[in-house]
Image (cartoon, rainbow, N blue to C red):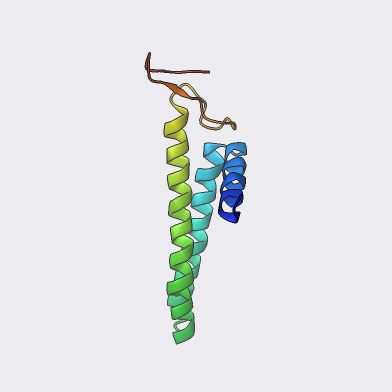
Length: 102
């Protein structure tokens, strides 16, 4: 088993333990940190701080968007009969009858 597969399995396991609301809130907090990093370059306009804010702030923003997309995909996969803040794995979709199976 490669390192990529181990990291992937660990990440999926951790995400299934958390709720959709937790992931969406984490995305909001990470986005606020990225905004603070970007604003620091406006408040203190020094060349190195501007370069730092542009590069690190962009990475933090990308992480926030990815967390938000993960929460959206998790909500879509779980379906409408699953509470959005209930942790646990998503229910499997039965294509034969078009319903979510427990």
